[in-house]
Length: 331
Image (cartoon, rainbow, N blue to C red; front, top):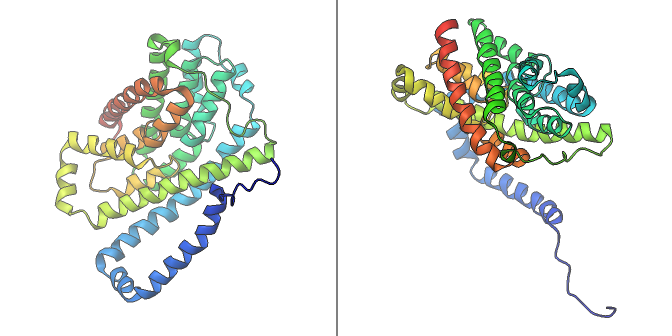
């Protein structure tokens, strides 16, 4: 009604965020100036020097692969229509699973992009078993990831083959397992992607921004964790975990889940964990692209919680088992 004063309008979330950002930056700079001597002294400590060396080394090695992977995965998600996959896959799910799994070897994409692409495949009529095989294989065995693994492990080229074999086996096995045991009411029909319906340019750059923000943040966390393990954690603790074959594998499998590093960058973090065996580090590389904290959240959001609560533990167990068996044969 006219003439009624409803009071001052509360600022919306975006406006208050823009207003607070300069204030937070100013306070941070003032704090740094006030405590610059203490900060300078802390950074000069040998432990911090070692920490910074490992952190910067991991970031500089991994960042080019991360950016390239994000650009290629966004291009595939936006410019390759899901109907292409539906036409290219065999009609029988049992045969479509290995074909979809092998397709991950030629289609670059990180796990941030594989979940929405798999959701689009299911919406377009692709058998869920085949879509799930692609979801697991694409971020694990694509050319960018395998090249990054070769660069990170120059003295152990067998790591590339081991990662490829173990990851492809897990992807196909989980696809066949879902085909035999999965139920329709466990898998919720996925909703449309947030970028569907936009122009291709807007969808591409929106996907790139989304993946860079998410994957880049997890890469920083992963590099910080690797640097902390190398510089801060007592060497005898790491040696005790690394010397036990079972504990070392389980420790790095759990670390892969917790760190949630993008698959284009995880090889450099694994390579820095030199206290652990190649088999334990292979487990880190196989588990991470298939199940971690962010992937569990994305899978639950795309396919439903009932799906994620069944699919994630089975994937984790099979990935650990495949890594140990592959490591015993190839490493």
